[in-house]
Amino acid sequence: MGSLNVSIVTPDGPVYEGVAQMVIARTKAGELGILPGHVPLVAPLKIDIVRLKVESGEEWVAVNGGFMEVNGEEVNILADTAEREQDIDIDRAEKAKERAEDELSRAKEQKVDEVMARLALQRAINRIHAKEHN
Image (cartoon, rainbow, N blue to C red; front, side, top):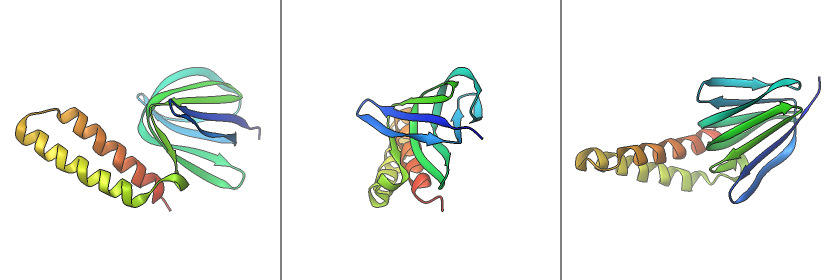
């Protein structure tokens, strides 16, 4: 089986650069599994985990939106924010989840920006899921 050069980049800089045998990502149209030789595509990403099948097993990256570009032997992900599993501070993520749940509760009561509160909650849960998947 061949391999893919994978790059995950945010406005703050690169998060992941490496080689994978498969990339699994959730796009707005559904989950995609990318193997070497995949047809070229560009797809918007949802807030979810990008799973990288590598020789040593699997790496998880919490990706919070963005786009994925595939061109046969490369997968480039331009994400709003992203964190590798080993870089996630679980205590900080749990606190962010609690804050987001409080904001969502207040947003519903006060009829303020519920969409922003829901997105903050999704991002926090995504980070926790990436860290605790084992």
